[in-house]
Length: 308
Image 1: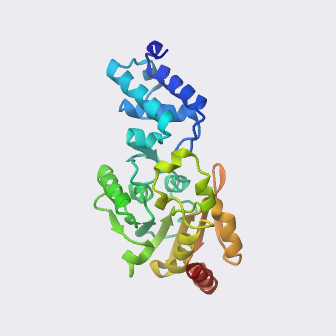
Image 2 (image 1 turned 180 degrees about the vertical axis):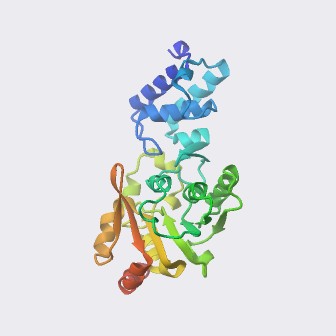
Image 3 (image 1 turned 90 degrees about the horizontal axis):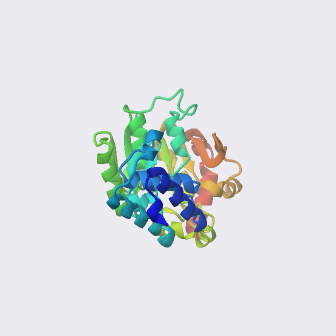
């Protein structure tokens, strides 16, 4: 059957059909089999995702055919995310190296980066920025790429994730403006003050993790889970962030489906839930002054969590 496949479009169509028939889960940068197959085929051929449509009629060599078919079968049989199969993915319009050392880059925060964080930063002077729980480094590096005047620290507890992040710093040529630091949340940057702190921390609940499709088992669990309600790290972050922010500083954090649990735990805290093109996505913005005003209640909830 595959002997009849010849062109790039043929293989994209075939890959999408195989992925659909196999009942794969699409949650790592793509939400449908056609985009996923396109990513796999174009990346394996070392072609950009925005290649002109005319090139779809290009024919694959015998070696290229063999490689593409093998990757399609691995995607189906091993449930490996495409980004891991081809070693790269795209985030905020930028290409990043991707492998099992860190989660596949995916976050609605990419939309904020591309829009200049409007309107959140419209009246603010930003010099120093922190990307907390950086993983592959995609958020912090993208912020540096879009804002050449910013100095960005990227932090993660995982040495493996940071090794990948450092490769991406070099890959994107931002060595002079992005600094990677091994740290358990703020422990490694005590005394530093940032105008903006952005984080996409682990926030998958224990029950959600147990029910995740096979694709997610290939990613480091450390980058996904954060306790029974997904908020263990977020609560620590809220309890400590004010000391790391400048007076007019802003905290932006993604908590996904744990949004409702967070709002229930801290109903008096004025979280601003950010709207994206596709709606609300579990990302909040919070001013330093609000962290200070509600420090007692935040600390009480965080302390109870640590004690429990």
